[in-house]
Length: 212
Image 1 (cartoon, rainbow, N blue to C red):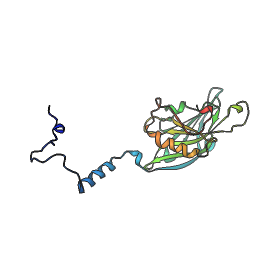
Image 2: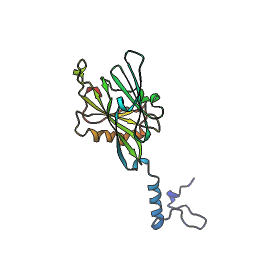
Image 3: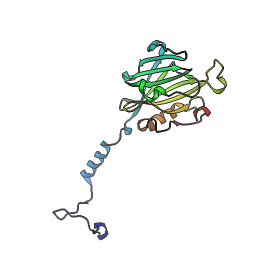
Image 4: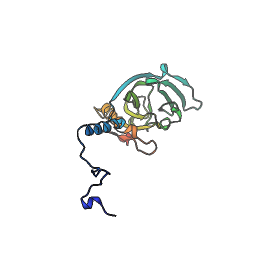
């Protein structure tokens, strides 16, 4: 088959005019508008909303049955997003959504002993809708395992529905002066496209061995 490009000939329509006419004026403006109108959701302005939580006051508790099962708590978050928290064996799990307890996040925690019984949740919003959360968890540093102190702080970034809910990344809040900015970077760049169970959580900034 002959190639039009090889012969330097443009395809012709029935009027003898080339299909590949220069685009200008109103046609160019219309094309630019079309491209902008189908830009991905990531181009939307990303903002933050904040809610405070104290699970002893704000959540409904269901007692555990095993010695190291502390039960679980159910609360309401920003814009009515359900929050589920479970605790046991000196570690916590936090998940979100209508099926929060069945989401991957309900089985995720930090390796060291940790907790999140109260604090502030930052909700990252695109077009006014939350797509990720950032929470400051407390955890025991290696030297504190047998002590009452808990000096470690980790920012945990979690993706929200639609799609599965799971941890997207971590930031060592003690080791990084710009920890909040790093956590927002993880949320904004990775949360919406993150594939739970396939993608590896992102760690940004300086981090100790417990984040490796």
